Structures are given as structure tokens and as C-alpha cells.
Length: 548
Image 1 (cartoon, rainbow, N blue to C red):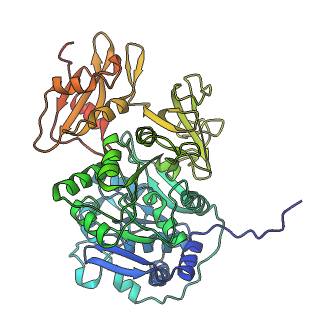
Image 2 (cartoon, rainbow, N blue to C red):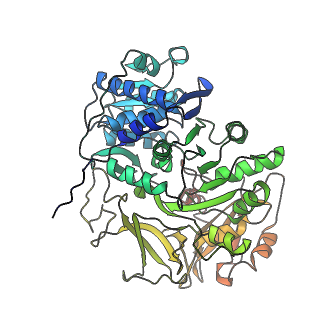
Image 3 (cartoon, rainbow, N blue to C red):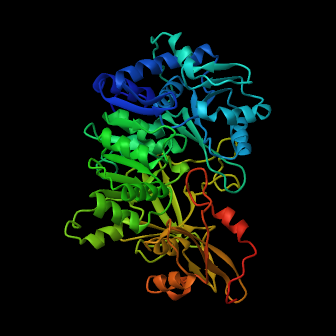
């Protein structure tokens, strides 16, 4: 017997139509190159998105075409999110911070014919013009007055194109499993790989992400996503915000500027924000040095890398703000787990709650997870057993663009049982809280024992004079491999390697104590803000431990 319910397809355009009807006056505030504080409401945003859909058709874009964007977090990029996907094309967000050869590879591999480019990114496209044979049109995301000079053929102005089009456009309906977006993994080893999201997966991800125990998104909030819109759809914020009517504040190219972020958060009364740990460490340092606070801020979501305990404690003690850590990947859209307390934890001490915040959160509806040993046997959720983390669910990739999606094949990340192999090593507590102990490629194998680089890093950055730390395994003649700790000091501070070791000795078990400590001015980071351990391994490939 079949149910007697309507089968309305899950369309990204339905979010836009809902927002326009139910939250027409909710604001979207943006920093752009041509306007330091642009404002428009959701009604205007919806109208301009319809105009943009007509622009796409006028440029010859067809159903299923990939439309590339190289842009920051602002209202024009938001318009592309909705117009491109809503019209049946694929919004392909590209990270402009990648190496130029990676940008060229991604554009060519995805076969983007049209690129929408922020004015600040135009020099990169100019430099790559001989390497982008399939690109037919470049649209600069600005108005006529701010159009840059260009030697490229067929360079058009975004605002001029919009002005020439009607806002009369009927969003089409089609199979909800149609591709809506595309984001390439950072590709620290080998070429980047394309993850392709669907309308269905994107809406389900936004719905689950807005639940009370996840982000609790609502019309009463104001959100400032610092996580880039070119990386995993800004963790779903552009969709969840319009779905529930949350005011959006978008920092444009100023995502890493502490002064701009503080001014935006204070003046726009931001209540929630999201980004990687390096952003929050820098913001906390700015607030402390300038003696400023952000009174409205209630919640900081952290992902992309393990969150140091010091960030959690500083936001709590200095700003009365809760840090919510989560885990996810480009391939999981990215929501996998998020911190939230469970019933029965109401009387936990501050320290107990902080201990839980230092974990990567607990599962959300729509994602299953398990950990397995080297024989692929499932391990218990006891907080002790550690193994390879696998996930599956409604917004998890089953393959990569242009590669085989046959489970178990060399190019497919999914095994024969339908589990996505994350490449993370983890333990899960009896209450369901995930603890990422390392990446499989970053685990240090020393004398038959596995050592977590993340555990050492988290212990090190809790020293008040240490700004950042990274741990890699290096060759040791007796133990095969031992941990090397690489440290960046806080400005104006200094420590000896002996002082660092003394600080760590009661925080780590004996085998986890690093055999060497090196001090550098700056750690290398990937384009998404993660520490680039591949680069560190290359730098220290011939390193010899002092006592070895």
C-alpha cells in the first residue's frame, strides 16, 4: 500500500521562495570591495536571484552546466548559490587561495564554461588565462564603477548584467537527486577530487543542521559565517539561514581581520558565528590586546581542526560565550557530529563540560558512524577502543566526480558495505561522543604503539605562551618513529625546548612525550586554514632527534 501524501521534490529554490514569503524584511549585510557595508533584505535578494537566473540563460548556460565561482562571503556569492542551483545548473565553488595550478586543474576538470570572479581574484584569473581553454566567459562580481582592467576576452560586469534582466522567472522543478553544487577537496596528496552535492542532500543537511541540538538556527539569531562560502557551502549556513529566517552578516574578504570581525559582530549584534580554530585564536588575541568584547555573541562553532582547550576556556571566561565543536568533511557536506549536552548532564562541573567540548561532538540524525580495527571488525563505543572511522548517511558522498563510484574500487571512498572511509582514527564514548585521535596518515607509530599527534598538539597549545603547535612523526633509529613538536610562540614570548617538555610531562603519557621541539615563526596552512603537515614533513624530512 502506498501512502497518500504529496511527493514534492526537495529543491534549493524552495528555500528561497519560503524566505521571500515568510521573512521578506530579514537583512543580509555584506562587506564587499565596492561597499564596506552593503544591506539588502531577503525580498530583494530573491528578486535579484531571479534576475541572475535570467542572466545565466542569456549567457548560454544549460541544465547541468558547471558554473564556477571564485568569491568571498557576500551577497553576490549568495545570489549565485541560489540562482545557479535553482535554475538546474551546478554551483561550483572554487577556493581562490589554492595554488594557481590547482585552481586551473579544478576549473578544467569540472569543465566550467562561465566563471563568476571577485574583483580581488581577477589577477589570478589573468595569470591563468592560457591554462583555461574551456572558460568562455568571466563575470566580475562588482558594479561598472569598480570594474578592473582586463586583458581577458569576454569579461562582463555582474551588476550591468543584472540590470538588463527581468526579475520574472519561474524556478523549474526536477529530480531532487540532481546535482546542485560541487566542491573539490584540498588535495594535499594528488589532485583535488570533486564532491558533488544534490538538492536532496543539501536540504536534508540544512534541516538536520538547524535542529536544536545541532545549531538551533532560528529567526531570533544573527549569524556571521567566517567559514568560507568556497569551502563546503560555508557548512550549510547559506541554506539554513534562509530556511529559518536568520539575519546573515557576511564579512567578504575580511574573514581573517580581527578588527573588521569585531566591528561587524558588535554593530550588527551577531549572536552565532562559525570558523576554524586559527581564526578564533587570532580574534581572541585581538580582543585581548584591544580590550574589547562582543556582548551579543553567544555561540562559536568550531570545525576543520581540533579545537584547543584554551579557545573554549577563553571564550567562556572572558566573553561568556559557548564554544561548540563539530566534525565533518567536504565529503559529508560537512555535518557529521556536533557538541551538545545530554539529559542527565545538567549538574556536570565546568571542567566536565569543558572535557566534553574538547571532543568532536555526538552524532546527528542522518549520519551513522562506526569505528573498526585493522581487520575491519567493528569496535565498541567505550571511549577506549580506537580505530578507523567510517560514516554513511543522507549527505555523504558515494564517489568523486569523474572517478569510479563502484564500492571497494581504488578510486571509490566507499567500501563494499556502503561505509565511507574517512581516513580519521577515532574513539567513541559510551554516550556517543566522538574523539578524533588522528588522521590515519598522521598517526605516529612508535615501537609498536600508536601515538596521537592531536593529543600532543592540544596539550602544547594550552601553554599561554604558545600560539600554535604541530606534531609530525620523524625517523628514529630505535623506535622507528617518534613525535617532533613544532611550535609557534605568542608574539613577544619565548620558551626553551626544556621548558616546553616540563610543561607537557604531566599532561602526556611517557611514549607521547615529543623527542624534539623546534620553534618557527609561522606554520604552513592549507587554503582552508588547516595545518599543512605534508609541507612540514618535507621541511623536516632529514630531521635528526637530539638524543638519537
